Image 1 (cartoon, rainbow, N blue to C red):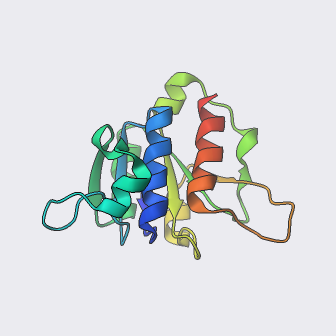
Image 2: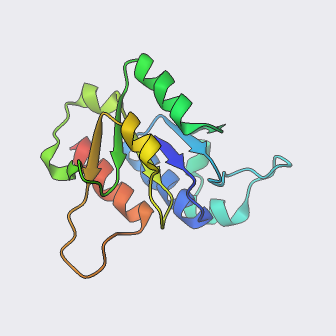
Length: 154
């Protein structure tokens, strides 16, 4: 999965924990997304408190340019699913994946307020949206990730 410019260390820690629960193999941290280790190589306590050590079990890598990363992953045969509200998005529950397809799918989650930039949405094979019924138009990014990834897994 790719986390692009997610600002909250708590959201990222929570995503790591959920990603471990569903067997995500690798998380790419792009833009300003915080990681579990500080610049001195020490664990970031706020992160570890939320992730409960999941960062020890999931491979992760910092990558500066998400678009280049997506291009590389597509060349490796991965399908790219962005999670975002967009004109051409489809409800997440309309997508069904086999186990093998799930393992070859990369979810892309974006910044908490602005979401994913149009340049990354253009790179996606599919844009998934969680339909909203209330007055609020979005969910917390870690909650949205959990909803979509567990659906795709099952």
